[in-house]
Image (cartoon, rainbow, N blue to C red):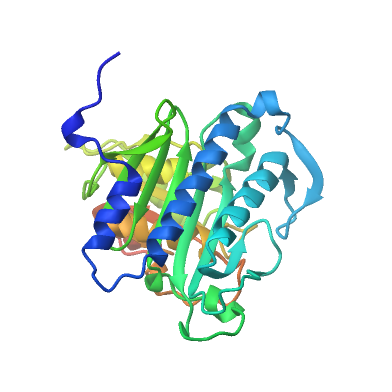
Length: 344
């Protein structure tokens, strides 16, 4: 078995601590939160890989806020994350896809100033067929960091640009932990023999234009005419060989976005006639993914507005999402406005 490159050997804890050391005013709270988050991901990764043995595949008898049947692994991941993130006492309030309302953290530290939002297991429909799934996280400071009162819903529904960190975990052929604190995107790969996340890609940058698109074309007939025209355009042969684009769709937003960050192109989850406000939730899915996309040099909008500028009105508010290489997203927006020459 090849050796790890010792000159590049750096764990996620070392990486986080190095970042903290660059800020003499740091209290260590933020570092503690990121370490708790990495610990939760390690637990979920272990049990995802043992899911068939541990009897946590399949559905429960419950439905969540969105009317979706809850899978056993959804519930388990949700409980693991809540338990892990409550432990340090630095989180005053949380919001999860699996919980109807905000989650207050009854800790002794009345000055806890961070807000944590998450989708515990993205791609639930892929769980039982052994296809890549993931977890999405966003972290904010509460609106009044000096308050000793419980957190409120207003702390949770802040604009995405106010995030102090965003990350996702990807449970595929390997477990990848991606995170940003607003200074670029770093990828860590879990080595189960060491029990550590090792830095594998630093300051990741996506191409300004790609060669693939990611969309569920099963909804094509529910899309707007402009959206249909854009997809038709991507599949049309171009004389300069810039098209057709390849279709790449997994059905787990984290996995599709991860591939887009690495290879470029565009991830598309538009509104349609059955979901006029879109499918993805802005608070704990779209905002975190948009921050990561932007920090990797990409663009993320709802078709007209920058995702990170949108002020949510509710915890579970939905949004369309167009994210990826800058040139691809801008061209898609041009189609949505009916202004692309291909449409004439």
